[in-house]
Length: 301
Ligand SMILES: Nc1ncnc2c1ncn2[C@@H]1O[C@H](COP(=O)(O)OP(=O)(O)OP(=O)(O)O)[C@@H](O)[C@H]1O
Image (tube, rainbow, N blue to C red):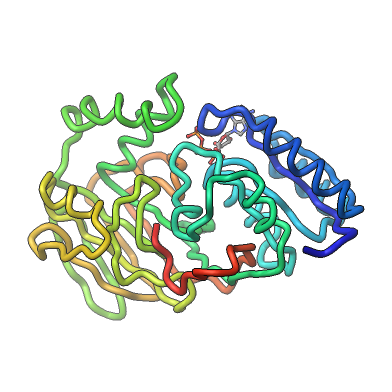
């Protein structure tokens, strides 16, 4: 771990319904020990991007630490835009899909060693409808669940569980999709379409067994049916999913179209109802501090 670092710690106080004080205290202690300089920014949910851009400009951090969920990591990634400033992650959201993929531990002291350490990966990013996506975006049933969760009052995994049954009852799936990639047009009926840069959802579901975070392509996942036995299979490591349940193809660019507007999400943040989704690998790569051993060369979302 280097000394004299200029560290910006970005804390989302509401993410995952958890108290972030132990994280803040641990970072303060470590920065003091290593004679660094620390600036703490607590997000408010409004104008954070603008304020953080100003802080990055003035404070010129050499490291950015984030205590929050994927939405907070994405916010910082959009501000840093592939600058060489490494990001250290304290998974403190409700699902933490990206951290799941990077195999980060849960212990705060270990996380601090990693977050301030010198072992990095360069994560591919995907530009989806002009927005940066770090690991997963989807259109259809899962985005509808995220919308209902964000409108509800209960944070964390329990919030998702509570919203799952009403979402299933009210949803109008299957949806019809036109998929255009590399000069080929496909038509599919599906419960949802996902664009994934990694293996698993933050829930631990392995939906994209062949996903790699740095291969310059992403996968389009067509979930053809709502099949509970197949969904349960995705919670096991070596999954062999039925082709009646899921169809997967890799590409660097895709256009998805649906005849009616349906819910859409990027990295766990609901983005409204859309009819078109355009996704392409972005030139921006994000430098992320990861554990030294067991360095994954595959994202296991
Ligand atoms: N102080 C705050 N009050 C309300 N919303 C906030 C605040 N700070 C950030 N947000 C919102 O939190 C979202 C990002 O959440 P993040 O990804 O960090 O965690 P999360 O896993 O989504 O957390 P949770 O699901 O528990 O809300 C953004 O929509 C952002 O606007």
